[in-house]
Image (cartoon, rainbow, N blue to C red; front, top):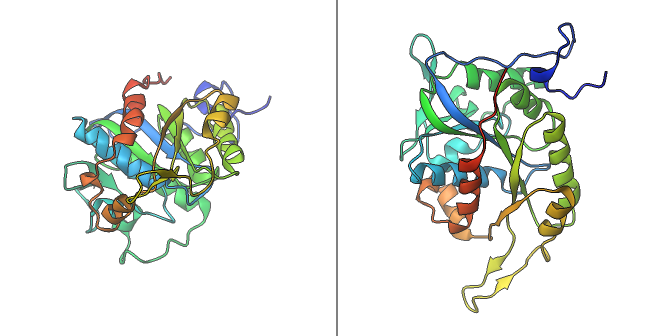
Length: 276
């Protein structure tokens, strides 16, 4: 029988690949888990994760951010969260951002922020599982999971171990967009995870002088690709130096980005998946 990697719907009890969904602390309640993915690096996935989390918090939601990009963690820097993680005797206590969202990242476990994480895949996947099972998340409306690029060990671990209610696919306007989106969509289908839609980042640049949109990476093909694969193009984000500076300064929660509003609405409307 061909494996679809969705262990929650599989009747085989002795499959070598079988992996049960990891249970979190009984006192924690995370209502929706949203993963932000990309088929390749460098398309702004972490920016979209941070903007989505910040906008959900501004909308009144209780938000948590799980940085699953273990070898390239950026959420602590983007949100201006320093310091190290600590335990309360039973669980790991997540950091709090300036605006009150909860956050965990591997940088909080390292002696120095610039220490490289030179781990093999199973160890990295195990760390991501611990971020779900061993962190005292408490009461959360939305958890945004910033995923590493590609379709390797960590995305597989997240889809198998966390109750992901939907994914956001981040891409850019370049010619590679069709292949990138296709890879992410096919993995989501294999794992039986709903796709909330596609976010095209770096879509255009608005000139301060003339006010016109300039398509630095060429005209967008996102709508055509989304139609081809039957998914929604939620929004196009411009190249915005102000957002880059806010990320560098650790103040992404201060960002004003009206273009992220359709993403927030898609997350709010996402149906909570029933788990066996």
